Length: 313
Image (cartoon, rainbow, N blue to C red):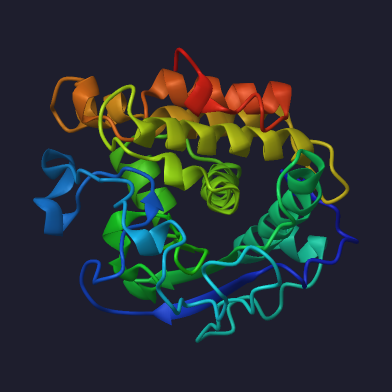
């Protein structure tokens, strides 16, 4: 993955919270996140896998009547520009150009998020959706306060539908995806995850989250929601491949597919010493996640990514 060195990335919507603290989620609902093995708080390593219920169907998480959210925006509205997440550090202050993104992983993250925003700002209304109200992203270390409550690094990257924010501890990719789950790594792993989480934001704007009724099982609404997030990530990847900002090669696509495979529910169950049990799935199998990413990449449309209408996942 390379960035156009002359491109301006200063408008990338990301901030850093620095090092936080705190425990698990407080009141306010749940977020959409990658399934990860439990850390020390979940019983230690892969043997104590953290079972994620991907979405608590609470009114404040699907456009209900709560107020507030960490982004300074109306969580019920879909119009207007969010003010962004105010950060506590200057981590991204020097990220101005594509050349900065080629030399620094933080600046690369900022450039990817700018690309995602530009893509969906054009694609969403073109394909029958509303105008994009952009998501903002906050990186953190240890813990962070969100519109969905307080989160620690244990939950992995996630999207909070209340404040429409994407949150990630950037150590997740090396420590969990590569270290615990054995993913191959690479510079396109994080962009795939960011694109997946941004896909949840698109679902939030489209009202798709309101279709979630069943939260566990191979054919559950939860799995359909997550596979659609992978499909949306594939849509953006197709665009990014030869965009004015980003250039990708086949190795980058392979890294995305490997990441999708690595976070499949069946593989995580097996890595934890269990047998693959579809009744416990919340995100889909490795094969399903790779397949729906590929559908989005090949087809490039919201209609092709309609997992809720698919007779077979």
